[in-house]
Every structure is written in C-alpha cells, then in structure tokens.
Length: 441
Image 1: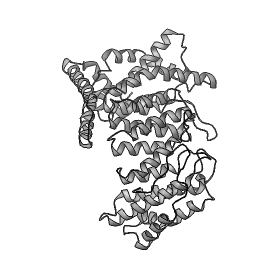
Image 2: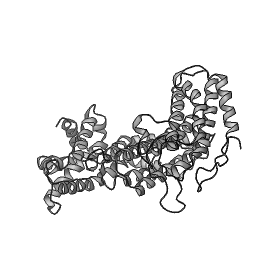
Image 3: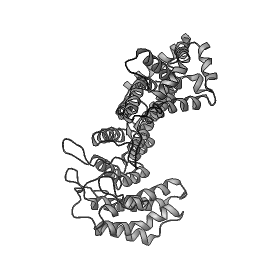
Image 4: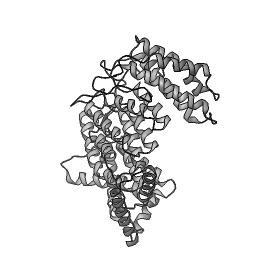
C-alpha cells in the first residue's frame, strides 16, 4: 500500500508529553472561547479566527503504534472480510473489521500523514474506497445491504472522533459520511443512505463549539446529502431547522450564510410537519431578501432559494416575485453606481435573481411540487403579476450577468414605476407567515 511508508513513521513517533500538553491547551482555549459571547462583528470575527487556529493545532493522538500494529496484523483478513462480509456474531471477525476501520479512519487525523505530501490523499482514498465498496462480493441484495449497514455502524464512532480533532480531520469526517450509501440507486432514483448520516451532519451544525469554518463544511455536506439521498420529510425538516438557525445566528459570517442558503435550495419538504406547519425555508429566504443589513449577494442568493426550494399549492408566489423585482431594482442601481462592474458578485447577483423566476434547463420545467418545477414563472404560470415582474426586471438582470456598463436609466425608471404601481393587494405569501413589506416600510 503506497501510504504505508508514511504510516510506518507513526510507529517510531510516540506521542510525547509536549504534544499532549499542547492538545490540553487547545481544549482549554476552546472551552474558554465558547463561553465568551461576542457583542459585535469585529469581536466575533476575531474569536472565529482564534478558534480556527486552535482547531488546526489539535493533535489528539488518535493513532498510536498499537493501532497501526493491530491493523497491520489483520490487514489481509480485513480486506477479505470487507469484500465478502463478516458475521456479526463472530467475535474474531468483528475485531478484525474494527481494527481495519479504526486505523483507516483515524489515520486521517494524524499530523504525520496530513503533512506528508500525497500521504493524506492516499489515506483518504483508501478509506473512501473501503466504505463505498463494502460487501462488493456479496450477491444477495438483502445480505449486502445488511453488511454495509454493519460496516457503517462500526465506522461511526471513529468518524465522530475525527469531528473533534483538527480542522482537516473534521473535514474528512464529513466527507466520509457521504460515502455511506446503503443501496445504489436504480433507474434515476435517489440513493438510500445509512440512517445516521444526517445525525452526523446535524451534530456539527448544532454544536456551539464548532467554528464557522467547520460548519461551512457541514452545510456543504447537507447540500450534497439533500441532492443525492432519498431523505424523508422529517430528515429534511431537521436539516432545514438547523441550517436556518445558523443563518440567523448573530454575526454569522458571509461564507457560512452563503453555504446555508446553497443547502436550503435543495430542501423539497414544503412545510414543518408539526405546529403551525410553516414553509420555513421560504420564510427564511424572504426574510434574508428583505434584510437590508445583509450583504447584497446573500439577499440575491435568497431570492433564488425562494424560487427553487420546496413548495405546495398554498404558497402565493406573487408577493415574493414582486419583492424579487424590487430587489432587482436595488441591485441594478448599486451595480450601475459601482466603479468595478467586473466583480464576479454582480454576475452572481444577476444570475440568482434571474433563476428565481426562470428555469436553468428544460428539465426544470417538468415535474410536480414539492420539488419541481423551478422558478416562479413555472410554479405559477398563469400569474400576470409574476410574468410582468419578470419582464420588467429581466433587462437589468441580463445587464449584470453579461455587461460591465451601467444599466440604462430608462430600464431602471421603468422597473421603479412597475414596482410602485404593481404592489399586490395581498402581500402574504402564506397564511402562516407575516406580510412581505416594501423596502423602507
């Protein structure tokens, strides 16, 4: 195995007292930092930088020479069991399986492997392959599924250890969770994932001691999970609630907010399953669009979410479409005033606003709620308000996407007149939510 050269160095590199002491200092610092509640953005950003530095320095000593020796002793049998299956009632086979998984996963936390050129990439590929190909020689589909679930259950405690180690280890743990596919998809269906993957992602999103840098990775994992997995509404709602909590957390960084919005776009469950049964993702998107204290690109990203996340027949898209037209006017005016119109942010803003209304491809015009079709124009094709909002706003959108010159003042004037004269009489997009308010009111 190519990675073993680096792994063998671990046998001679015993954990010395100074490394253990350093780890203890990091833990103490993390606990102290978590207890301090920043009261302004600057203090929050400083605290986040310190937290990331502390997490980068963690070296928990998860790999010891004994772990490596035990893995090496059982290596041949481990490979065989991983392909052919292990009997959960056979203690010897289970010990062999655990020894292999423990080393393969925990080695990703080790500073020797992390700093050893290609060693980390090789080590990650090894365990990624182990998880994705477990039971590949088992012919019976039920037996294969059962064994893969067994492998993932045995892997989970070690992945959880990664999620408390250094920054690279935490990222690797979140990546590995997405390899836990219990049953491969058939005929375009989504993948059946191991039933504890979402819990792992939620544990990071809900952990106040995890810095934003890690939560960004968790939000990305949530997005990828929602794209690939056949997640039931209860799981989608749990993820949505955790993501929205991060979106609304005081002083949350722009990168984290953006990652959260990217994930929320793929929640297809239209409402909470208990209580008021609010369309919580749509509500969150509308709130971000309306919040002029947030960065403009985030507000435009939220507009895209509003046109593409899950919905049902009770949602009234007309006031949301009007609000997006109003946001387009504000964005286009600021674009026209900017001396640097080549900034990628303007391209993104134009695209996000456009795709709130419009599909990206023909496939997105097809299907039924709650996930399809995409865009206000397709979700309420009969609405004259939505169509006229789009026609009034599409010119400035296109200018931001494709040009680096100011929007024609006539287009801005026309859009301003449209937004003034076409405020919907009913500004509630859902009976469980507050009315949408025009800017400044």
